[in-house]
Image (cartoon, rainbow, N blue to C red):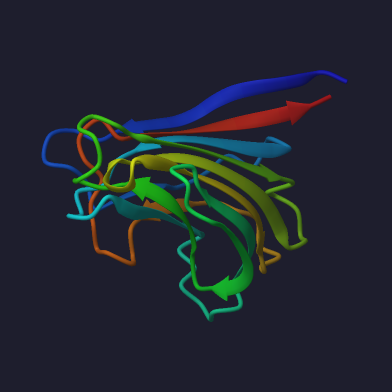
Length: 177
């Protein structure tokens, strides 16, 4: 089987930052999507959150289900839990983390055009200068909608933080054949 990866969209935040990044009109011609994110937030703490919504959905708390493993690599405990939210999220470095350090996030969404619930995996690394470590997050997620994914919005709904300059998000289409 051959797998082809094709860039669809890339957006890099300019001077002044951006409160959100939205990609609309995602082509429905691929089998899967891969999202690659390099972000930093302007909130005052060491930790912010990149939140992710599909199709502008702000529905009930059962729309996005998570199972995740969260590890503070600076010696903190591992934690894991299942929960339902109105948005997916992943750890992102904030203003008091080491200067010019960005979180790295990858998300894989198979069968994003299908009429089934959408599953996704998300992995994140985020430096945490305040505690001398870093976070490693692994997510298994489910979007409880049978509609094809046509748009994705990224922001920080928990802290109302903005992405700083040079934060970059790219979406790739994957074709299997």
